[in-house]
Length: 193
Length: 220
Image (cartoon, rainbow over all chains, first blue to last red; front, side, top):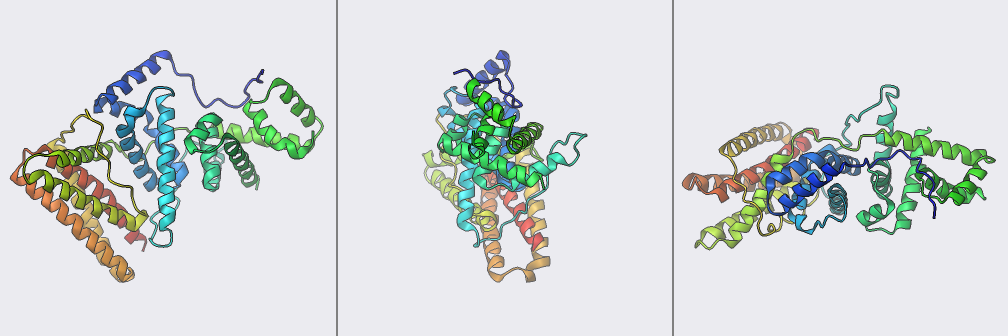
């Protein structure tokens, strides 16, 4: 089946072979217990993980804690990484799992504890020609229902394919597509006000 | 093509996942339907705006020291559980368990329960040796956070629910006792890397909890 050329802005940038093999080498070293190698991997991907945790949780303080949890868990589970996907894709899947698990725990405690954080403002990069647009979009994304927000972040912001989003969220591909459609519709409604 | 069926296909068109034949059908409809054409334009604008969002957002501070400390804590806990020295291994494990429980209770007050303590590392995990500077730095940070919290508590104690005050006080007592016990043991056995790692990890974690307490109390 011939697929029409993708008109969407590509999010996944092609990684030069040298970088890919360098990453594989670092992962192999970390898998053998080299924490210095893992630290290099951490610095190369903490921004990505933190962005996902921040946008999924809506809390800067919680995002820091979740980001730490992701990397501690990644260190423990490194042996399960087989290189079938990119290391950052594997890490993204782990991050989604950590955040969703955390959200489930927090829902159990709602009403029983005083929650700490309001939605703390943060400053995304804003193109000079559209001073308010990026901030509006970030806030609109933060206002999405959790399921739709997660799928939107993974597919449209982080560039994962539907199969990868489905694997990360434990949902069927059709469900993910429906959630994405819903997210885009809600965002268009909010941003058009 | 009926408009009601068009909306999900517009998503696929924008994502480039339609076949050539399907895309042609959709475009044919767009050429004659203002509503769907407008929706297509809005979707493309949204995709373009989303494409300008940063994929990576660095945290406000370097989280590696805390991550490293947590990994060290897990290693120390594992080694304590495996220790063969009479009394010491058991003591470390019991103390580690008490600290973890105290931290879990403290965090639960502000944000819900945390997960179980880290399970033992994979075999072959490299041993973390905290530098003297790590212990001193985290100890200093702990003291600052502890003082700030005490000051915040004292100034707002009357505004907190009695149960909240009691819970905070009880948890602080457990945390203080755990840190004091580890510190005392380290003074008696300064070369003990397990204890040094445990102290660093414990203080790091507790500083984070205390800083969160301060925010809770500060907001009343």
